[in-house]
Image (cartoon, rainbow, N blue to C red; front, top):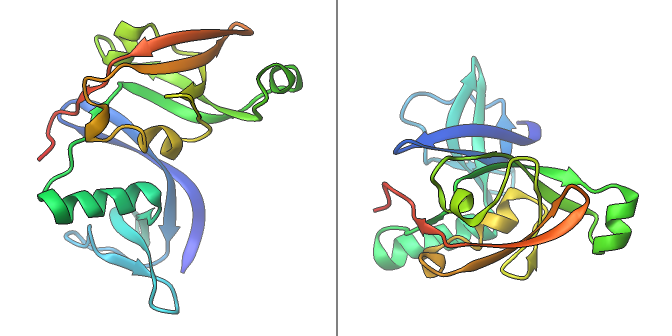
Length: 182
């Protein structure tokens, strides 16, 4: 039974902190070792991958979406997934009316934290910036940014447009390969 949608969980991997957004909360009891198991609906369709125990009788699952399909495809093809890393912690953000008129977008991705020494830090991204586009594509949630950060983005300049202090600012970050891949 799904008891919550749109949850977010912080995760640490090889010293890097990131947030997995849009997680499914389920009342299905998960036990240690259940991570990676399928979360299915009543029609037998896989809708998520069990990821973590959230408490007594609560589990969290990553939803099956464009990003997870791409990861599964890479695993089947190469046996591993190479991911690009920017070094930002962010949250979805609704723009105010004047910003909507100025930018033509309703939503962005507010930068909560920029990790010191990360590609985002070197590129000039700051906490408080609102990412509007990355690679000329609108960004409104973590998935829209994460789907740009696969193997082909490693070492390639990524133009990012942000809203900073009411002004649109263009920066360029060069994503690195995320440590611990493979």
